[in-house]
Length: 181
Image (cartoon, rainbow, N blue to C red; front, side, top):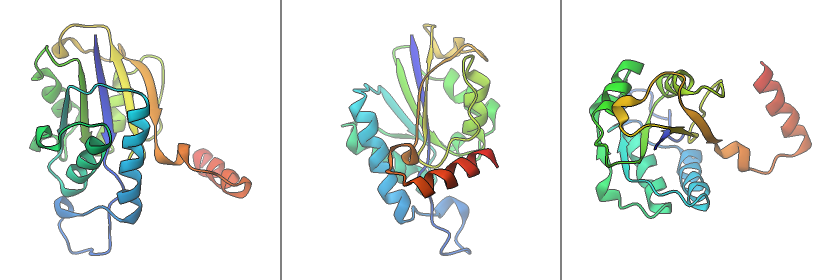
């Protein structure tokens, strides 16, 4: 049994348009949402064996903020360059390299690849978009990460910050409009 958590990095700042993409930091919302997601994950009593993050600044910061909330030592976060700007095949390459002793793995990275990977793996759900700070948990009935196959994963949960924020009736209508449009 293996569980994969795909965590999209928190909202990044665009205040400095000339800064390289790799160096973009989290913005104010991202700095609040990442720990919130960590608290939500902590409430689920997850036992994450390994966190691997894209080394991009926004992903690395997200990984550290979530790790702190779930009592995962930030020094144990592995940075993997392959996750930054990865395509689906490259994410599968990362998964195939994971030791079989690891049962729960969190990857921290980027869209659109993470949403595409989730949809490729899930047999019982379709996710339109993993928003910033969103996490998708997928369970597989296999013994090795190399045995993970397309449309064989079961959705355990899909969490994201807006799902947990108080929504007024007018905001709720706005969100529904966004979801439809």
